[in-house]
Image 1: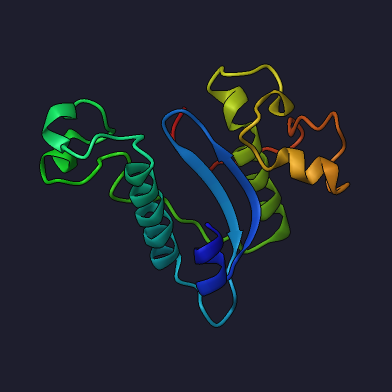
Image 2: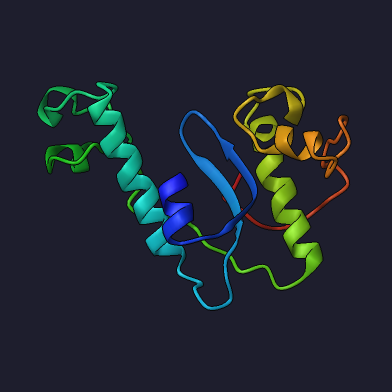
Length: 150
């Protein structure tokens, strides 16, 4: 992540990592709004580092069901990433706040925890530490029609 941030800067407004997917809200520079290149670099570097660390076997054939996408595994890729991503450009502050709330609330939505602060792999802890959100933030007050279907 640090190399991608250095090479293609962006601000992380919210981020949550779940067992089978990730959500992020970024602010990109006006002169470089390329989401795809950033995601590609993050996914590529993560996969390379996971393989080097021995977190995934080097032989994709032996673990065809070990990734998210067995078809990619058969092609020699790790298959831990979806080949696509969902992108939305927030045009208002209300829309931005709704997407940040959706991101931070996603572990609750999926029944993984009772409160957003109970999920450790979330930027909510950074935001509370920096005083951006109260320690008891729940996001319940923000409504919106966005993200994947429930």
